[in-house]
Image (cartoon, rainbow, N blue to C red; front, side, top):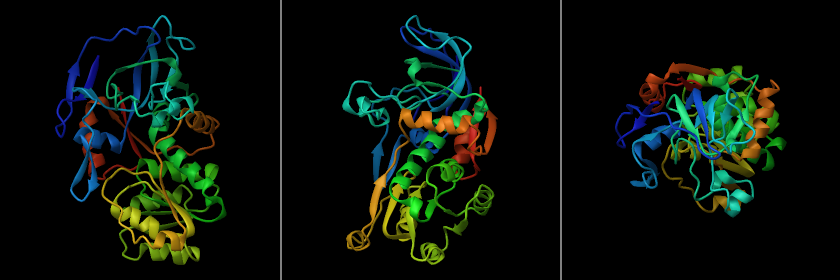
Amino acid sequence: MLSYQVTAYGRPLERREAALPEPRGEEVLLRVGASGVCHSDVHLCDGCFDLGDGKRLDLTAGRDLPHTLGHEVAGEVAAVGPEAAGVEVGDRRVVYPWLGCGACPRCEAGDEHLCPAGRPVGVGRAGGFADHVLLPHPRCLFEYAPLPETVAATYACSGLTAYGALRKASAAGAAGGDLLIVGLGGVGMAAVGLAPYVAEAPVLCADIDPPRLELARARGAAGTFDAAAPDAAKQVRRRTGGGVAAAIDFVGSERSAGLAFGALAPGGTLIVVGLFGGALKLPLPLLPLKQVTIRGSYVGSRAEMAELLALGRAGSVPALPVDERPLVAAQAALDDLRAGRVLGRVVLRA
């Protein structure tokens, strides 16, 4: 079994070989065909999130090194344990990686992605930056045909995260006004394609990169804005006649969140998704005076994964641009993502 692993935080991935695991009980061994590279992999590689004001959130606890990253995984079932039901060798599946303990109130409510004891694939357990991955049970596997394998892999995080945030925007009333998407990385670009089927609102986009803004327009954005402009929020308010009903920040920096908050109409909702880091500093009187809501959104539930895949398999959703690279290029992909050189999603092919 070949994998590219974190052996020390803040250091490049290392190539490792090990014996191929044999599934026991309900376990399933998946031969990895495609594994997406997510910005959270960069943070996991560093071992921390930036909380702003010199503070860091430690990500090293509860994870033994070496560790294999990669939570956007699709491939072919290579072997199954004696108690694994509903899946057979040769089945092609995409992994729902956000696995909880299965017994706590969160998991019983269907929100295992919020389980405090969860061990997600590629985060708490070995992931897809490898040619095989061992999964705890078949319940985390979904059919994806006729979607291409590389596209299906991106549904596990970039697609699911975008879908979950858009559902929150829709519930917050975005369908009655405009929706602003801030940040057009892999997740933000996925949201642009999904928005007509989930939020049913005119979509405006803000980013600092002109090629990304151009791609967003090609994917149906009603308007785009240079996020680096000092008056970007004012431009959005002017364009919409008072601000947007909802704004989704797919960057999660102080600057991006400030832009998104400043673009809200009275009664609007800011949904923060991105994990870039920093602190959000706001004049507190604006919260009651504008009656705004600020909330977070983290990936999505297994039920939302099923809903998203149903849309994708029906051919309703435009595919996210995919940059296919060999598994050996895993570290280079992380470097490019950190430097902002990725348009769409990098997917590693084992």
